[in-house]
Image (tube, rainbow, N blue to C red; front, side, top):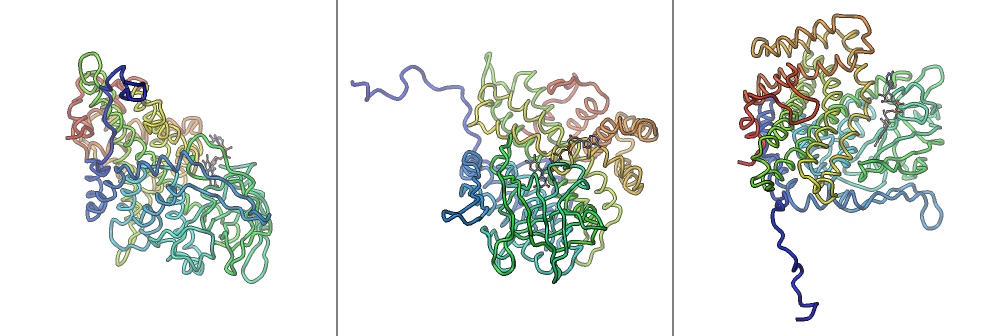
Length: 555
Ligand SMILES: Cc1cc2nc3c(=O)[nH]c(=O)nc-3n(C[C@H](O)[C@H](O)[C@H](O)COP(=O)(O)OP(=O)(O)OC[C@H]3O[C@@H](n4cnc5c(N)ncnc54)[C@H](O)[C@@H]3O)c2cc1C
């Protein structure tokens, strides 16, 4: 036998490596399915399972891998030297977006009068977001732009039907002639991101209802989108919101000179650019000087998507960890049967279930706040969504990186290797906590709502009180929270502690009402009563670990 005829490995057999997690239904998730029903979108279950099977397919996993390995490339000029400012992406990016848009995860719910349309969309975003997070950015911004655009009926009547379309139509062409549009936003500048009033981009009237913008933006993601909401200063009025198309109605390119793309920690499939605006043609959205208020209509929705995206990342991470532990043996038995590993997995699942339950409740509130055909919006739900979305954005997004790191460790060294998919989840995890309001900014926003919008705090406590009497640890936590919020001293310094507590109390109240007793008890014991360590895997004795793990272990 020559060396060429030797079998591929003669030194060992490959054993004790888990099979790839592929060919499953990502929507086969009891927390998701119960919440979907509860929040009024049970009618979407069949479609969700179809999307879930696609999400679990080898094809989708390959797209995710390709879109992140072959990164976007900026082409500022064509071969003849004309300025084009285009970004080339791997075809897999288009495939991911095509599914997202055609499944109605972008603007579609705004054109769907069915009660639960926003919940159905949130559930889909959660399922498909477990495949790949980067492309969720333009999907989310397209979803979010609609309420902001509605402040200006002329623009909405032209663009809303295309933003709510289920057709993915890539390429830079005049927006009105396309079958579907994607949207982005340009707020952040070099000298100020959170503090958008520090923006220096200017807008001057240019006749026939148009304006000209001059300045720069420091982070503008998904730059191949068709339309952007951009903030600029109007003399005498202040920060104002504008609509900027990449291509003008006459087919010429609007000025959008991308200086470079960001070299980012994660989110690598998604380009984030630094555009220069110079004579850039724009249309007014909302009123001059009301730009922050106008774009907040958009930001409220992208904040919801941050919660959904982080809940999706957690679920994906916990499922991978549990899958690995179910197949990997060490020290004479399966990892999933080792008491300490069971504590880790159960603790991770409790965090994931709390996140998923909260995000579905938020989506339900947004849905009911909108109303629909023949339904008026529910003011109480609107007030609840105002404060609870910010609370959820603060806490669920903060928990994402911790969950990703611990879940990764459950795979041992394999989890540190790119092919496992865990490094991508880990790199992605901090982002949702940064954009659309970083941690401190969101915590202060919650306090602002508490101080200035009493209806929102009342709606929050009305929700929490629905679980009163069900668990003494929750009741105690509510009392403590009321006392904390009632103390006016050093509120700003205490903002994170208060908002964290608001999040835990809200999650606890939802789990006590809707989760199996094992999960609710584990949550209340650890997160509310404090019988818990500082790392995952420190649930106290007495918790029904098998009952918790039933929620995440394959049947
Ligand atoms: C991958 C990526 C994509 C992005 N895409 C876009 C995009 O498409 N469009 C867009 O407009 N922006 C985008 N951004 C920008 C993002 O929204 C900002 O980075 C974010 O809002 C924070 O602004 P900043 O970077 O200027 O930080 P800063 O505002 O300087 O904040 C720095 C830190 O200070 C904290 N802080 C701020 N104010 C206070 C305060 N009063 N008290 C205490 N702490 C405070 C913040 O919480 C933060 O932790 C993107 C960012 C990233 C990372």
